[in-house]
Length: 436
Image (cartoon, rainbow, N blue to C red; front, side, top):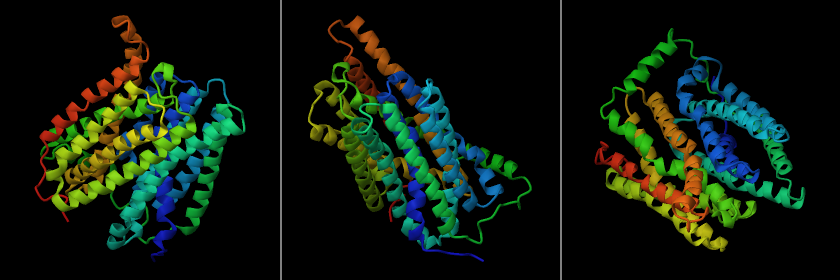
């Protein structure tokens, strides 16, 4: 018998719990390591490796279907995330904090990716088709609020604690923040254990004798789809510029002005990048959905490719001018994030289009895996590029100075926008796809 409960009681908290660990691993960790004195090269390389669990999660998604209920996976993974967040907090008090905190964050990412599989599957089981359509905007909004909290509020809190409570001791402030987050996820697990519905269809799936063989067939069918070459090029290259920019943007905003950065405090960074930026990101995504629903993806693919890539130039402007006005800096970040939100609509819709067919769910999971791979690999080397330019330029151009490393890195980012435009040219998109 299916036990259904009011979706308002669990969808907002479930998708907040899904988005926050991703934001902590992908964004807050970059700011944290910068504030704790880790180099841009090491931070970009090792935090990019945290994408790996999201890259390979389609490979173990059958496990979530085969063993136990998805409701069990959700609650268990939230408690596991509480443990991993507590472990991060403790690791920050060790002499080799960078290594041990990365291990804990990688474990957090693995658990979070498993939680994503269960939560998205549970959403489809616990709601009717009509409810799924109605609540998709709610779940996306709550996910974005979690991103805002992870990119902005967490950094603001750490900065405030370091300034007001521990007098500049960043290790203690970040330890306190992660302990608070661990407590939050412990409570979220207890809450969801009580309020999540118990759908009749939420059960282990032992019915298929060879589930992993079936997954293999699904995997092979993905690579036999028409236009697979162009699709893979688009998945891997459309975000080539962004994958590198996102790993250096935070260090650039936080770094000292004499080093070429903008010298923002953690609180100012949290406001500009994690609050104003995320609001602009959400607004861009909403507008992107509106225009595609009216005129279709084919009509807007080039405009969205431009919106995704060209606003990256604001970072080149900021590196050249190095303004002190937080309003101007926040406005530039908002322009870039709005363009990203608007352009990313094309990316996600194309993944949905390419996934259509008999194995839609599994193929979409594979698409998101390639999406994460396209973010992980270029991001790993972003720090090497930026710091390499910082070291080489003074020798090649004596008047450049070390600060030019950021400037020329952002020039490189603009060059990296070109493959995304090229990949979009070869896509097969039906004229009416995306229209209501």
